[in-house]
Amino acid sequence: MDIDGSTTLLGILGDPVSHSLSPRMQNAALTEMKLNMCYVPLHVTPADLPAAVAGLKAMQFRGANVTIPHKVAVAALMDSLDETAVRTGAVNTIVNNGGELVGHNTDGVGFIRSLEEKVTLDYSDTPVLIAGAGGAARSVAVALAGKGVPAITILNRTRSRAEELTAILVRDFPGLKVEIATPEDDTGGIINSSKLVINATPLGMEGQLKSLPFRVDRISKEHVVCDIVYTRTQETPLLVAAQQKGAITLGGVGMLLHQGAVAIHLWTGIEPPIVSMRLSIEP
Ligand code: NAP
Image (cartoon, rainbow, N blue to C red; front, side, top):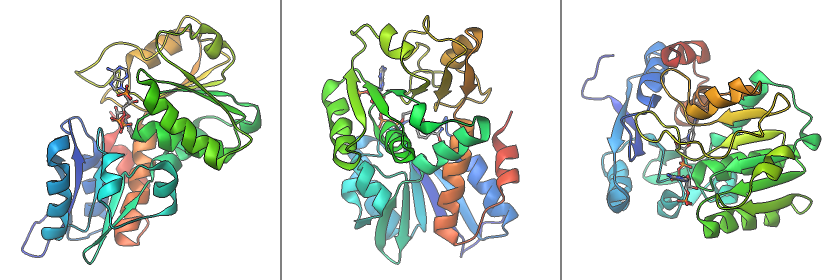
């Protein structure tokens, strides 16, 4: 990659951000696409988020991805939001249209594409448990509700955040059964009655948090277990435990790939090279 005086910048805002595989993956795409663009990691604390977003405009970035913990907070800093960002109240992709920052959310479509590469589900017969109620959980929950799942239980340590996500789901999907649980509740019964079980908390992130997001003793070969956390080895404590129970498992790399590909398309208007992107992040 040759950086010169007219290179256009893209980046990813997060805290932490050093774990992110996005710079490697997105630069692999931009290089193969022969675009004079470069994608950089931007470590931004919550307190600095407004200044960082203003800086994207001031420094004429073409856009950025947004990761933990900023996806919800950044939505309020956009000049406008696309339909999915409005619906989820979360933004993972910013497009700078000549000084107007537009917030998009490609996480939901990324999750669904990754899931459907691995399994064929009858969504109408797939009750879901999602651990977490942050930006990623919102996108995954809204995407699955849009596919027609009958029930979603949100398991989150902070009940009020689970209630915010419940309000979004109830507003837009009247037929959907939505329940809330906290880690103090007995989650065995919820896991028994769920078919798709998803971790959308950071528990399991590399070098950080080794604990499990929910109990795994009730996981069986009847379950599909997804961990949207990704690591370089593609293993997390949850995936290892679920594999031992015979469940079908799915890590977060596929979601990363597909949400990132849609983001590149939003910035450039060009379909990115999925195969090269995948090769750049697989171990
Ligand atoms: P976020 O908006 O900060 O939300 C984090 C959620 O996890 C919140 O519900 C939070 O609960 C919960 N949580 C945080 N720390 C916890 C802990 N120690 N124990 C239990 N719960 C905890 O973050 P996010 O953007 O949704 O990201 C969540 C994870 O998904 C990150 O690891 C991120 O890298 C990953 N992710 C992966 C992809 C992909 O493409 N594979 C895409 C998006 C996100 P409270 O409400 O109680 O704070």
